[in-house]
Image 1 (tube, rainbow, N blue to C red):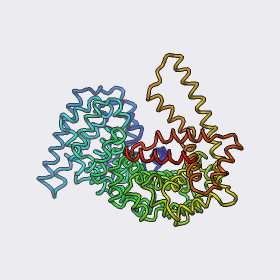
Image 2 (cartoon, one colour):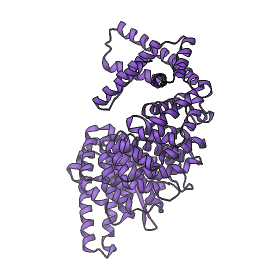
Image 3 (cartoon, rainbow, N blue to C red):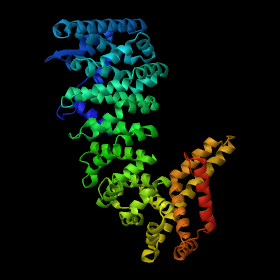
Length: 560
């Protein structure tokens, strides 16, 4: 991903102001995997200016001789963890005894740092993660996240260690060990502690900014391994912190990009986090951040990725009905409409947001408001022709046409009275040119779907010859392939055809049937497509909604 490339580049150079050599760098990771705990502790840190830092020269020197290191096994890991527990207890004891005399506990501080660095080697053996839990090391590590000395421990050592322990590739090497570790971390409310830790860090200091980045990496690793924890993480203060960080008036950096990505992950397929974001006025935060791109394109590829993440987050939020009202009150429709008119890079994503905001019966208010703000003047030129700039931006015609047709279909479904009349009048303008375009797209996607159906039928025939069974799972997979080939857009186009033919404006129905006859089309084909659409409608909705929507569509077909 672009964000990961940004981190890699910034690690390689100290001039870009984002990242420099740290314990996450590839050389350190390879050394940890190759050497024993003894030589790892010997080389990893050096004191500079009163701060413990990684020493690349000593790392390199150690890598040349670490092949003679002793192998790390279960016994040595147990010994390592017990040493960590003793040093942690000793440090805590002296801190309590001599709170105003750092010199009395500094040696234990450094000893504790040494053993934490040594424990990085455990990240290469996820099958031994259960020892961290059984010997109480996880609890002690979480306790150190609130350590007073952030320079030495909180983010520079414990966060780095947790990041490596939760590395997604490592977790997938031993699912059993990973489950035990993640369970223990969640039981200790790791996300709440990490958020509290980030609140204390000053991102103007480079090392502390790195600490924030690495903390976010821990959360991303755990969320990728166990998506179900997103709800709990959001409720433990993460959502509030992300929104605060995203709207902070500081220059764009890697951390802001990472925050936008984590936010999009939290909101994916999760109504609980969507509701929480709405309650925290997150819709307004997203709209404020995106308004920057109304008249200006992102300056870099990284900033563009952040913009897309924020748009994705907004689309996810609009899947919840309550957030559509917040979007409406926050003048989100006006902002998206302006983005469509300004023709900047944000236009494609603004179209996607409008689609999400207006779809279904929950989008009725947004549809009416869209007509009131003269949105029809914006959407129909995009219906008539796919802008070349969108193609240059990497948007394929199908994606553009799908969103535009979905918006028009939503308006036809939801609009009443005067607003519906204004919409239908658009189809009669200039000798029904928009009906002509509708039919042009219909035959374009009909051909694409027929080609896909032919390929699928060939595959089914081959499967039957081989004696394979076509079960429901396989049929669903074939249906998804047909949708991807253009069936969904074709269904939207047929729905628009049927709606305008039932509008009571004879001119529209006559034009639809005239072009069908001229192009060798068939009313039967349209009816078949719509019946198939009706059969599959309402996924995720109530049975009552599904039945009423199916009846409405079948009633429209009777008069087509």
